[in-house]
View 1 (cartoon, rainbow, N blue to C red):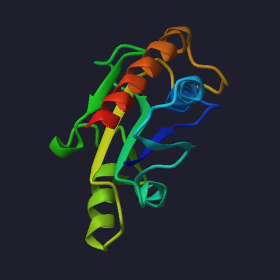
View 2: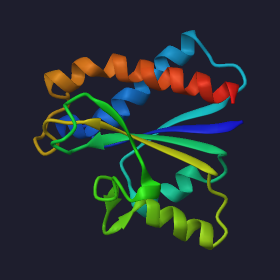
View 3: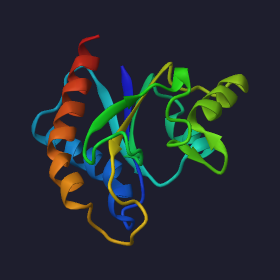
View 4: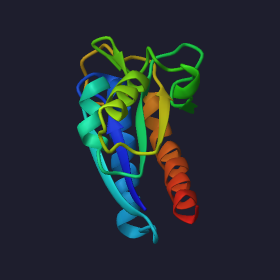
Length: 159
């Protein structure tokens, strides 16, 4: 199975870069503990909406990790975003085109997009201050979040 693990964010805006930092941590773990049965590409990007379509083209599965600025989610907490129910539209939206809409549009024009797209958000404290590190609570959670995603990838390989 060909899969994409995609970290999104901006690493000069404190917690906004957490998706990128998490996939970097997963990539490091994969170097020592590769997952058999999964042809996995790990990438990072600072785009959203329609800009994601080309990055996801050609994969059977895409797992996306991004910062989630939502006061209901604790800083560093990992949660799955249910795009089918419309949840997370605002969090995963750029220039008025959310991920759900972008996927629907891409599929309608015949783009070879993943059948399965899983989106995970990591709770944030500050996504507007310039800084090349996450806030302490978010930074401390990165190893655990990366571990959970690594286990999700292992489960995906067994499906």
